[in-house]
Length: 216
Image 1 (cartoon, rainbow, N blue to C red):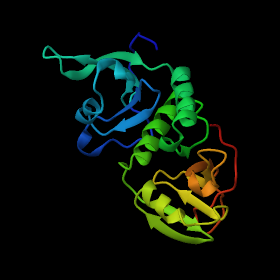
Image 2: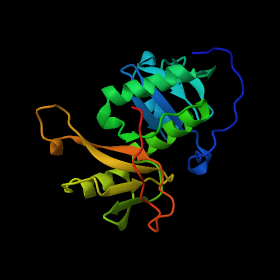
Image 3: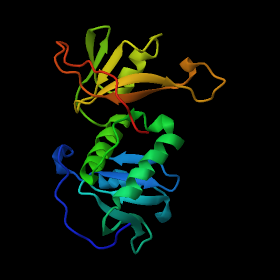
């Protein structure tokens, strides 16, 4: 990571948490990403200093954990912006290793601001902490759900997913697919991944999409 601090503007397109509290994204020592609604929630998620490989705020500034004089975990000083290519590759790796935790597969982010925006949005959605309604389109019948977990429950009994599109509270449209945990298990035993598709303009439903490539 870079160590020379430089100011960065707030990330566009990522709404702040309620009450102006600082929220964070972390990468732990196993490579898993997590979202934390506040600094106390961040500190409570870890047990030792080196357990957090990287901590990011919404401006993209990186931090480490540290110990106070009483040897309690605290948020350490800022180290400047996280290195973009390292962070993007770490997210790609996390999707492969921790598939069940990172199921929203958006298009490959090409800029640091886009990567940071996607991280805060998708992780807060996957953790069930983001507010706003999801739209679920099954054969043109649109219903609303409050969380990704609610969408999962509705689709768990759906035999075919080819006729389904999902829109998250930030306006991104996905095509759900089942992912097998092991090759010898049936698809129904796996988890549902949500692959982003470009919004299809001109349709009256306003949710449907057409298939497009995803990366990771």
